[in-house]
Image (cartoon, rainbow, N blue to C red; front, side, top):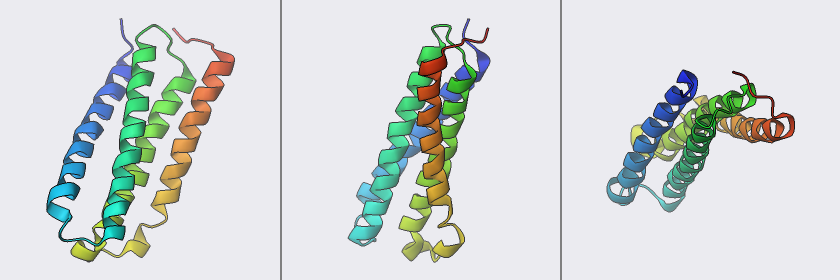
Length: 136
């Protein structure tokens, strides 16, 4: 039977995937004529990193479905979700600041913190591969 944590992780990744599609479509259609090229590129970067890490999170959930439930995989999944929220989320806000009037200086520090969560997630996967100590 699948671990409840990883089932919730999969659902959270799916929700973020839906939001990624919506954001990408919104950027490509509605925002394209309203933002400059740099702002659109910022949004594209956020969507790209969102999808890379949503897919990685889904793979982690799939691996957990095989019975490999480790603390390192949990750490990676949580890190990727936090990275998406902070990194991609802040880029979406920064990219649309010219329309919303939102002060970028109040959230600009979140982008690199989100990037650190991405790095931590990949390191957790590396460590998981090294130690391979399943928790049951």
